[in-house]
Length: 300
Image (cartoon, rainbow, N blue to C red):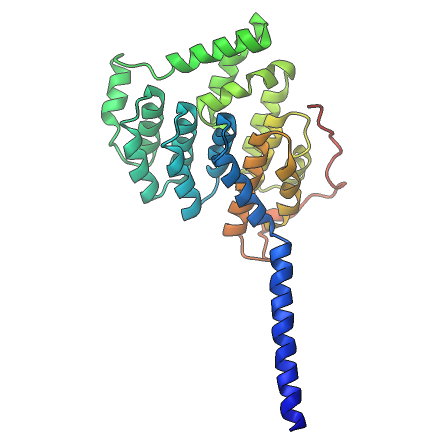
């Protein structure tokens, strides 16, 4: 009888412990859960730049149906810049379902969005957008005219400095790390204020593919760079590795005051959480000796 009561008591205690553990887990959300909240909230924000940032953050997440669904939602956005960013994200995902969604964007009312969709599909081996590319080649449509004009207007209104227009060329030439052209326009002011920012951002983007421990250290340090474009590219570079142990560093950026940085850090965390086996960081995660994160206080 006593043994039976002890067994019941023990079982009850285990159930209570299990419930308590679940309650504690619910009270302490994981970095991945917080990251998804950031992306979801910004994807549904009333601010178009926030929605655009969310789409760009989704672009580095691989093999996620949830990310794909949010990007598909972005294709229906009223803002063409957000739709363009959604097209870019789907192109980076590169899945069969992403290709299906991109085909719908070939009929978008924006020439820029149609052009981006055609390019993304072509890179995936899908030539559905051939007619769009032929129209551009034949001069029947120009996908960049509207974007360039909006960029010039932005520079004139916000920068009040004719020299800043020179940075339009830098932005266009740096599409490889800035993403869609409309996202690059947002960085124009930053490049005008900080002349070395474009080079630092490009370096962070390229070093994201390098497995040297010293590169990893520099990317971690750059998460605290004074320029938001550099912080975003450093987060992107870390997120594309199979390096789960940098998640705590990226988690700090989920409170960054710039939405583009927050969303890219969120996308990086989700991608790392999905790709890396728990507790099994790859060899590429070896960090070069040095201090913790460099104290590069943001000036923004």
